[in-house]
Length: 185
Image (cartoon, rainbow, N blue to C red):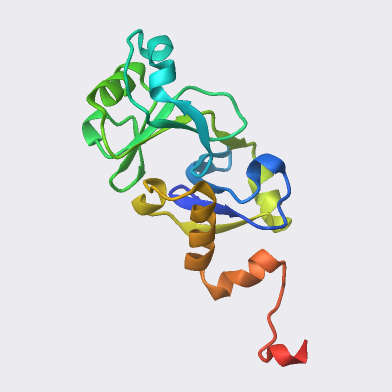
């Protein structure tokens, strides 16, 4: 089994589960024990400033959005580029932090670039692999640029689909084979 850690999962148009429709997920763990990642294109209407007193015991005036990383409840996670305050490496130069002290430092410092995420997406052993069999996802190598962006949430999905290229377009359309000459369709 090849690990998908550091890759993107791109939801196919056939994936109709409302939460995962047109999502792009950064895979943080993937092994025979299961998989875990965070949705990159689901910002919430809430900001870190709104929950800072509850989270940090201190009011922080910062309109940084909190993203919804998935349907599984979990601690606040921060994606960032500061190796000193890292708990783990997601990609070369991109780190994750859930440790409360380090997260507090990142928020109080207003570390940029940053993505603050509530919840995560998780799969049990073999569950994600079975979803690949249903053509629910396509994978693509992740880059830091996929994480830290300013454009609209749906635009990330469109951009990554284009980057995945025509070879993978057949995966999105659910085609097993592409004819050499499309006029034969």
